[in-house]
Amino acid sequence: MARQKAQPSAPGPDPAPVSLWERLERPAPAPRTTLTPQKIAAAGIRIADTEGIDAVTMRRLATELGVAPMAAYRYVSGKSDLLDLMTDAVYADLKPADDIENWRDVLRTGALRNREIVLRHPWLIQISSPQVLRALTPNRIAAAERALSSLDGLGLDIDAMMAVVGTVNCYVHGAVSAECAHYLLMQEEGWTTNDDLRTAFAPQMRYLMDTGRYPTYHRYLHDGIHKDDPLWRFETGLDSVLDGIAARMGI
Image 1 (tube, one colour):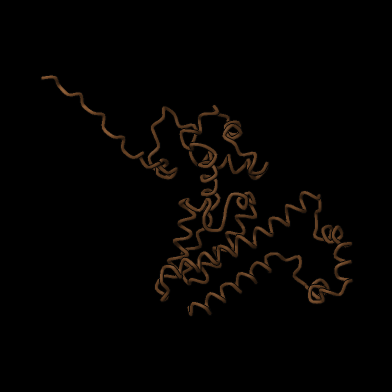
Image 2 (spheres, rainbow, N blue to C red):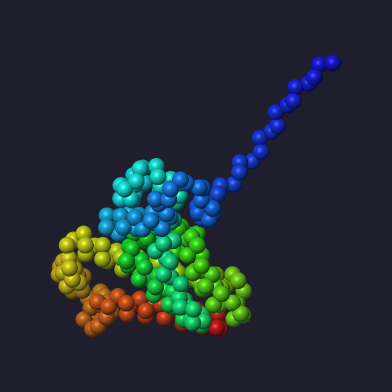
């Protein structure tokens, strides 16, 4: 009796991709360790800080590190992984002091530190949104965990807690994006002070104010004393957001 040929088994589902962070927890052995994730992230950050985020490529990274072009691929699979690694590194300082427990102090301190980080590394604005892109890194998730845990036990459900954290993050992202755009414009135009900016826009502003259609804005231009104090504006807006959260949520 002839033997029947075994039928090929149906292909199974593709294995789930392994995340960057899981790979870094158990890196493959190498004969020598000239590179580390920390060195790779630091090199990428140096390039982005000095030359802009568009200059960050795997080839440029290899040149900065003085290694073969393929060497960094043992740790990162491409530019997307590299940007995640850089993001995680710069957000390592986001964690507030251990002695800060009150929800408002935790969220306020985190917001101020977030602003400082982005102003040091404005390329973060180009690759991040307040809640989604580049958020799934250990240090950013740890910051979210810290913020959420500060709200735990105050009578809010978990959805309301996340909404509070997301609202503060959205304020920070929007306010700092505007601040970075201001500095970028000044840099592109070669202006060194806000007086240079005001001089450049004086003809347009003078015409608009002379129409008499914007009396309150005109009063701000004449009487405002914090026009050149971005930290005051940021903190005032932040405190207004936190006041609103406290009133709305009863915490």
